[in-house]
Length: 428
Ligand code: PMP
Image (cartoon, rainbow, N blue to C red; front, top):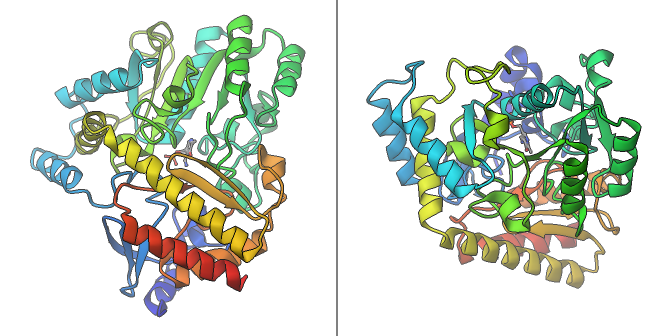
């Protein structure tokens, strides 16, 4: 595989951009080798600047749930562009998308649009603090909620990959208000809540974690958190930036039947444009400025191009529930095939999956929290990743990520992925 143009671009990029990339995991540091620079993407495929074609299993880290460059979304963007790129004033589309979100995610009675998942989570925690008058919040080890200071403590995703789950630059003053517990450990949560009684504004979590690899909540975990939050008057925040509109039209909360007070969203909600949102009970959301005292704003929030893309995407998902049946089936086909390959090759690895999210963990133990995920052999993962890439399959370049499938993947693509899996696993 010739990747000389990507290599050249990366060398040049490093002169002008820290590490050569605008988001750390893109540098392929965790898997070895140089990153691919992308020229375009279409449906189930992504193409690098050297003209190599790859089948997509990350889909821009989640947003492209219908595959790349979907004609409806593309047309919606072009149509919106013809009317101007930003107004800094309200539009009808913002009302329409807000109404649709509240319909698709019934726990969201009111919603505020922002520009990224990071903004959504930062704003939601600020709101929970303003609403409850309490300072601390609890997050789970290995969960990632964007790069807001208070979240970069035992953070997942690229923070694990780069070896900085606790980032320098976050002050001890900020860090002291972030409390931690292991994912799926309700007893530990109870202990922390007891030790900080009356001081915790929010518990925030990825209801199905994707940022330490895909990790499912154990039966009773989410229900237990809901109960603790009700008793202690803590705001329960589901960070559905990954799971929202992916696991079901109403996200993980609909799929798993547990209702948070606030929900943060991103990725799919923007159809590939930079969008995030946070929403929830009207009683809490009305604390946001200008109806309430908690300040949060954005020059480009509700941007018409982004709203047009997002609205088109959400309408499609709302009107085509078969998308979710297809995503489930695609996930199941890949995971079943992968498990069969692992058996044939005689490798005792762990796969976690739900719907169109899955991770193959290179460890033989169950992965139900961050500590379990860290038992993985990241060296072997790197070899697996590179083997798959050489065979034309584009996976997430880190052990601690989930894959995100799309409806553009047809049987021929799935068969190619499975063939590449078997060959690559044999070669490890
Ligand atoms: N929360 C979760 C669960 C995420 O997965 C991410 C990003 N992967 C974020 C928040 C941050 O979103 P963004 O990168 O858009 O700031």
